[in-house]
Image (tube, rainbow, N blue to C red; front, side, top):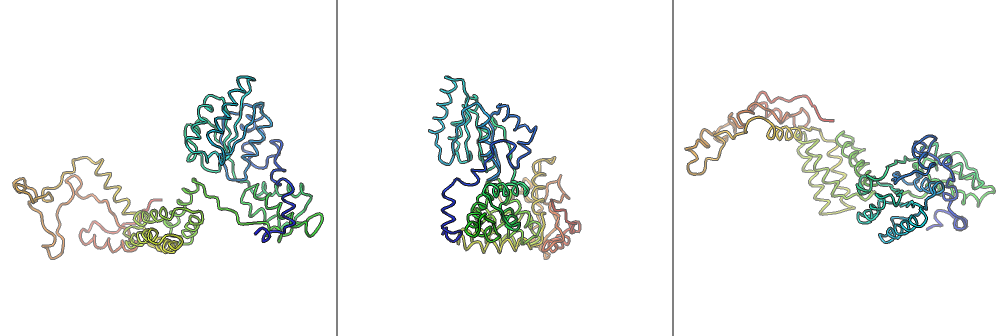
Length: 442
């Protein structure tokens, strides 16, 4: 398959030397590209690194933003021993060995230990707990690097004993600077459109652009010396980049999904659905959220929406993916294009608030009480109840709410969709229940 992307000669060239991203790793903080809010002149993290006073930290940011780079720069500044572990392969045993060496080192030479733990979110709770006593006592200064939201993935006790630094995706200028550094290091040049294409596809990931550039240069060498990277080289070098979708993005994307449907944007709803499916999101989770939305944001404006959402949820269970994506797509289109109303939602919230907080005991009116048991009539239970089906209109005016809530309205229909018809029915039953202007929550 490699021959589909670049020639075997180019592949051999790449295998003979260290990756470009590794060879270009900065040796000083001034050489770091991006993250100037952390390592720029006078910034707190830079001051802590340069004075070797760094306490435990968590570096959180997308791939290729400099977490490992900054951590390895710390190793050059510190007088402490710098240990490295990857949570992908390390075990509790490995952690305990580092701790044991740190105790011995401190006792024999008075030298502290920094532990750089890459992909710290890959450690489970017990593995993270093994670190906690040593971090708390200061025996180990932990530098954890993670692409996932640490508030979801790092144990709260460990997170509370660490300073969190957020690294941002590299901006276009920073990625372009990395590209030019890579070209200079390789003694190559590139057509402007090739650089633009590489930068556009990097997605703020420094490692990604250097890796892609290195492949493009290897391809260009086959044509000329010194190599000149063309747009064709850049396009050939760029493979499909894996979609980043961490736990924090799980919540961000589902939020965008719901808000797009609520906002009646069919195309946006379909896009976010596709993003979730491509990232491997649980289809049952998506379906459950659609069922909720059908009542929360559409309600009586289109009662069929709940049936459509429920049918899609059942299809997910019955059919499964990939076929159920068709059912989810249909549901998204229906829900996004349906008239909207949040009045069913606001009605139950208002009713529950009244039930929980309003003054009075909420006593059931005597005519509505159960009158079927012996002696009920002597208590007045059920006495005076008018059976609606005995009336030719199919309803009779009588009190159904407790005394202190008579006249209270929890449900105020909008003039949208089917709810306008509901409003007309209620107006016939009670002239005070006319349609109102829409006041949907934001």
